[in-house]
Image (tube, rainbow, N blue to C red; front, top):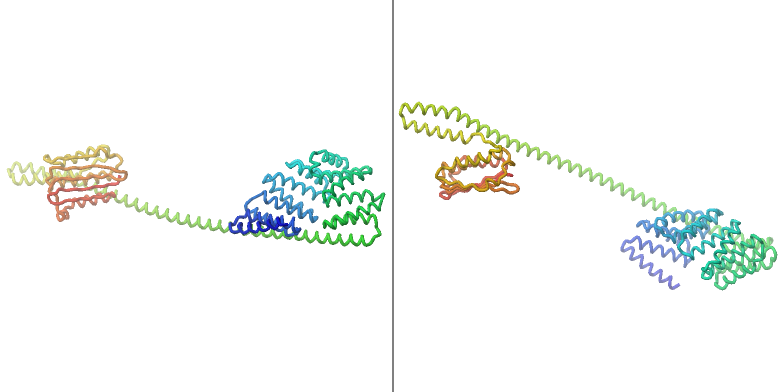
Length: 555
């Protein structure tokens, strides 16, 4: 008893720890141990059934099929002990589903044995035989196989197949385990004697007595009741006094072991011996009614526990489904919001891209239009104005007016410069050569031009608009140098990075003051040109310290 008290203490500690850690497995174990305590120690089978059912639910949460199957197996055994054979059959069938999934061979065999016993009690002998054979076939335990074979042979007695029963008991008694499992050995001896007597009516008193002696020696009360009952039946038709003696012994042991079913069976046999004995009949009726009410009450309680549990599980499932539905709905709403937001962002990005594209197109069109205008002006200046001035110069040569002729020649030269500065630019394969020629042509004879990194630039990957802009800006710088700075050295360095092309210009000319810069539209035009293609133009100059400029354009 102290061991069971220690078990209760340990079990309570286990529950507290499991609840703190929210561990369904250990909570399930707690309820399982509690079920064992009520089943084996207190005898409160109703509480045991309840706690086994509770343990099953916790093991279901974590999908532990083996533990679920074992809990249901214990519940089925309790139902069977209270003659709830239909309920037990239903529960053990459910248990088998989980045990088979978990491949728990030992418990699968036990479940088949319980199922077979239910069929036996319901007089379904063929099914009982089938499931006992399954239990015998599947078990790995020789001891359990010994018990199942004993049960199978006993069914053959119920089924009036005495030869098969006797053969089964002989097999048991010839097994080496017979001397180790004395209870099962005594049972086999007693049942084999009973089968022999039922089939041939031969004298088997000594065999009955042999089995009884083993049971008395081992204090096997259930076995003693069976022996006393068989001896009473054996003497019933030839020695009623001896038969009554054995029945009385069966009644004493039944009451001693608190086994009302065995007492009822003994009273039933006693009524056959003394049919006019009213006190015995009354005791039989009262006990039968009491057992019936008790079994009915327990069956109802078992059914209620299972029904309430079913409703609870359905409610849990309903709540889970509602939660899942809500989560799905929330996910849908979130997805809709995400789609709406994404669509808005995409539309915004498309809008930004369209605006950017239109701006870039406008810039390109503006650059192209400027370039066309410059080219048209250049052509017109060259074809019309320059030619007209040239003709006037020829006419004036004959009139010998050198001063006027020099002025007109200067105008002609400037006109040709304007034409050249605004002439068309080849932006194709010849662009590098044309740019290089322009730089050289704008360099005075007494000025040194140094160009670095020119060949490192992949000119084919640069757009036509950028080429024209760069050409015009460098042309403006060279023009500024030629006309104003009187530089003796000009350095232009080309370099590139992943995103940019950089051009550094510097000369050692007179430079220019900030005030003077304000009047140099050419430099501001150059800056605006570079900004139009997304680049930058920075210049720095002081009087007598030369002129520097840094140009950056997107690569």
